[in-house]
Image 1 (cartoon, rainbow, N blue to C red):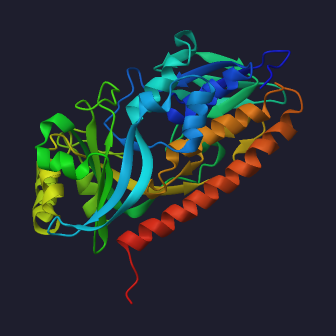
Image 2 (tube, rainbow, N blue to C red):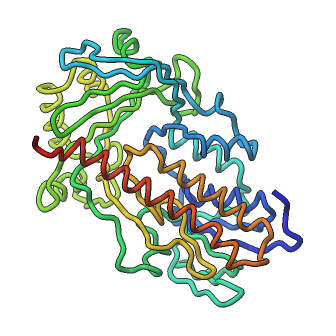
Length: 382
């Protein structure tokens, strides 16, 4: 990528994966970039696992932010268990797994501290023919040539542009958790390490794979086992109760580790003891702080609005079955950077080149995720 002659400025709203991917890619083609993150402190890892797709790896290695060996754990086999714990089927399947924290830290270290601003809650923004202006709750106003909405599923940028579009509940929740490999007995390590393991049951399934440790280490003995269990909850009555944490606070995005009401986890463990293979039961029993995340869908009709663009989950909220949320954020960032490598020249045409393929990618992934999730959680009767 060649840097533009002049250095236009991008204001990126949101400092998580979507905003950081756009930020590092725009900087790589010569833009001045400032990221404004709503959270006042450090971003929370929560231990979520991520399948390392090619788009993410291309961004990280292309910009020399990290390498696959440093950020991921290799899985060599995919296996499906029977209820008694025996292996129903297995086969060679090489994949690489990382974590939200390892990916975030790699991107964050590649972006200068002076241009990353925490505790900046967007209040409003305006766009003119050649300029955008963002106003924040702390009274600051910032101007630039491009505003990037990379502020996640509940994007404030999207809410202003498309006030009638919001994430829609899909009918089920992902229970999630992580366990340090050295906290597990040898039998469980043998079952899960180096493998992508599944158990399927009527209207549900659970999976597990290894990810880097809390410190980002992918070496043996320091890794973690990441599991995800999908379970249906009625939106009218069951979901609001689950999303009320142990302090009585009603959550929207997820109930974070340590905040799940004990009675909800106890109920889920009773289900686990009745229906899951012994290896998965042991894994869940070893989990100290599980968390719960409602599965939602969202797709925008467009990603470009003059000098404002939406990227990552501000544009498309994908179901985890796609294993592609981080890949979409990385692809959005790379294609946006490539489209704007000439800076502010031919701006409208450049953003059209960005929007068309990213809309197609997002819609295809959204539709695939809905099909995969519904097939698992809401199968049609034969």
